[in-house]
Length: 335
Image 1 (spheres, rainbow, N blue to C red):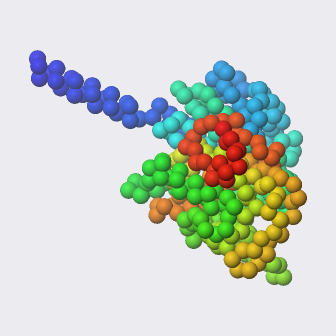
Image 2 (image 1 turned 135 degrees about the vertical axis):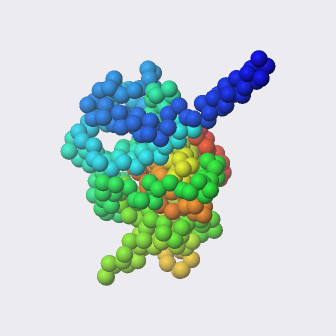
Image 3 (image 1 turned 180 degrees about the vertical axis):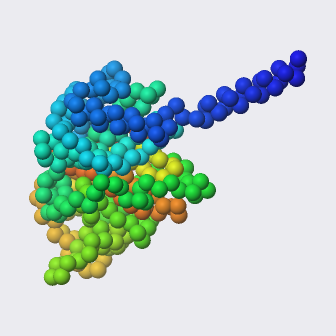
């Protein structure tokens, strides 16, 4: 009798451990919830999505009731989906393409999922124009997303090459730490294959056209940082690592780029003088996805960003947070 009792305890213990180790909502489950969310948005009816009562919805860092904002105006959703799934924490972030009253939009959204129900919705929705930010940018927008994400963003890493969520977050954070008041002294660990897309437009490694002057969009990711460009990005704050996909080495993160407009021109390390044309302070709000390679480098970068009121805060105090040195010096309260 004692033998069977002991065996029963062992078996039950194994079952309990196995159940604890298995997430309540795995990758397929999380992606399914996201698809239900988008399908409901297209009908303008939140009741058709598994959204828990009292769930908070922000669009471009502003609290809105459901349905409001894009929930009322979305009229089509394209095929493009880039998912960052985090079964361990019950989170998913995704980028999708759509149209709003016939005009192109990008949909960057973080969902918190508990017991199959959405309990948090944080969304960024750039309304696209002929420039990449619909704000203080002269870079013309050319959609490079197509219908499917880049292979590097959807490929699982070998099990023995996967890093902890803390390590992935730390590597991703070096990107924004390197941008803040950049003098070329804090270059992130970029992969030589790094390509950056902003609102679907390639902004690194673009082939130089005949007769054109070489600029940062023609440079590899590492070169533009190492030369000291982007110095007008004076405060990179509210750096939050929101959804971490250890299997694919992806980090879905949020940040605000403040430009205080005091930097009017500067020289980079090759002697080139960069002139800043925007005359007043401005801020970009962004949700970005970083792909971290098996050797711990930043591979692919995909950003969804838009101009927001200067100094705007995210309205959320979550994720793995990395403070801004400049915000501390300025006495700017990030949260």
